[in-house]
Image 1 (cartoon, rainbow, N blue to C red):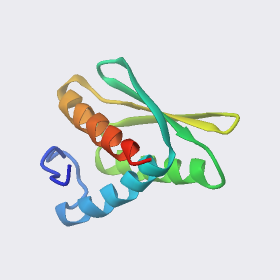
Image 2 (spheres, one colour):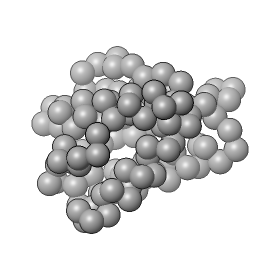
Image 3 (cartoon, helix red, strand yellow):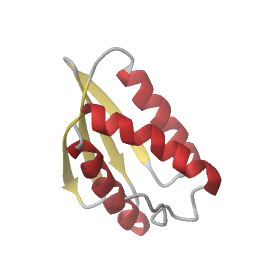
Length: 111
């Protein structure tokens, strides 16, 4: 999924910087994704393997992402050596969450 056409125009991250941001998320998912689920249509839950610096890395990326795409809500929680990342969107951005879930699954399959 190299095409970034699924990223909505409402994201304020400049177009030329979007591949760089994706290049930060993809390795995280390919290295750390343990599972993903959709508890609700507008809610994606990712379970990531923890480790040194992982929580800080996830929080930093989530903060920057929500700063440029304000329709995302990110919540993190940790237990033992597992980090849970919950991502929610509003109804208007369900397709974006679907695309993110597909991209995450593809990156996670590389693990």
